[in-house]
Length: 302
Ligand code: ZN
Image (tube, rainbow, N blue to C red; front, side):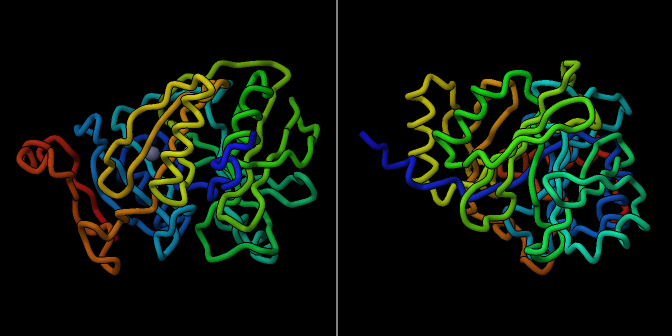
């Protein structure tokens, strides 16, 4: 018996959400230094006392969107098993030396490609990976998930999401298993990192909160939800995230996975050519705008 939903692979990454330190420093780095576009200023819908800033490629396409819950308190999280370790942008190989000159960081080789590893001002590791097929700047190449026992996570990736195992490589301090989607979707690579010396992840600034995969449409999202529930995964109902609709579950390795739709899109509450210029609140918070704004630090947008 074949499941029809297994014939439709997931469409790559939709967005990645991390926890950062103070919003202004986060904003200055991701726009001023890393040159991604600020595409949305909003608040954490589950905790509106903190900003939620979105950055991405110029066209704000799914598969380029990096978002941060901005904490002003300067705590620090701990990368470790049960969380995503890093997100990676694809860059044209010829551009990598210039990026290293701008960002610093160190270059290593992974599955035959050069990888520039950089740490952002709040301790978050991200990577630029040389990729001959890299599109416009700001589109993801991959994510790395730190997983103690890779088999159950791999089963979700291959049996539900449509990834294929493509290889294993020994790295410094652990081994890396690579999974890839067929086709050329943005962020079509997921690496599972199995460290020799396990450390447990502790959430906080400098750590990744969740990984959002991209459903092809609402029907695909529903089919994935049904398939996950049938496997005993505890998947949420569809949640309205204003710019997309999402379901969430914690995969067996401990990483929070989201599956998001493309619609309604980031231009639902401001025009595409003016994204990220003003604080946007979902309808449930509009009545409290004055109080919410009073609690948030003012942001200087370049
Ligand atoms: Zn999300």
